[in-house]
Amino acid sequence: MATRKPGTAARPGSGGTKSRDKGTRGGRPEASATIAQPGNRPARTGNGRGGTGRSGTGQGQAQRGRTAVAVPVAEQTATAGPPPWLQWTTWILSLGGLGVSIYLTIAHYNTALTLACPATSTINCEKVTTSPQSIVFGIPVAVLGLAFYVFMAAANSPWAWRMSWPPVRWARVGSVVIGMLFVLYLVYTELFTIGAICLWCTSVHVITFALFVLIMFSAAAGYGAQKAPAAAQA
Image (tube, helix red, strand yellow):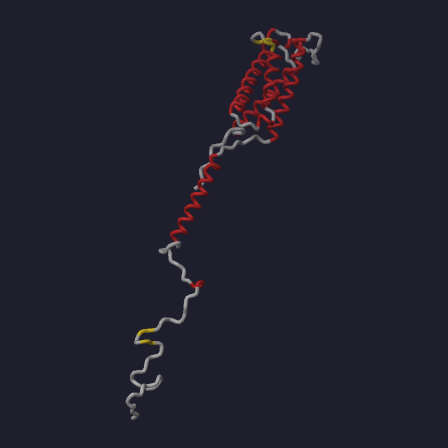
């Protein structure tokens, strides 16, 4: 068995009893030699600062921002305009009725003008336009028809159809209803009171009936009426 001389220290790696273990210093583990680099920092959990808590707050703020923008847009009202064919058809019919009304008004005040109309036992324009029933409330029926179609030509123009002002819509509907009732009265008068039919007056009656159907169809479909505001987006 080898002996150690007094004053002689045991060398590292030798089999002495006081040799130090590798990686230890005084019995405590040495600090790790690996140093964390700036790019290797561990991700913080949701309980730390700037973690899930801040992310959730940012999403909440973004959601509130989207809601604040969506509400005013949803509250805007819109109008549903009629199709172009209905706009132009009603306007052309109104202009046609206006032209016939102008012709009948001129013929009423100008006795030298003879209406282009056959004179038979059933069809006789002169007999109708010169009868006592051709004046209502002291106003010639031709003048009433002229005033009616001046308004209808304006109210049924494509520009008026695009207006969302409710009084325009209700004035159009109310006028055509009154006009249709007056037409029924005139037809009854021609058939059972005067006993003759005026072709020019009949053309105005047909135009008024066509306008009545189209305008009432438009009102039933909701054309020109304001839509209810859409529900606000969440």
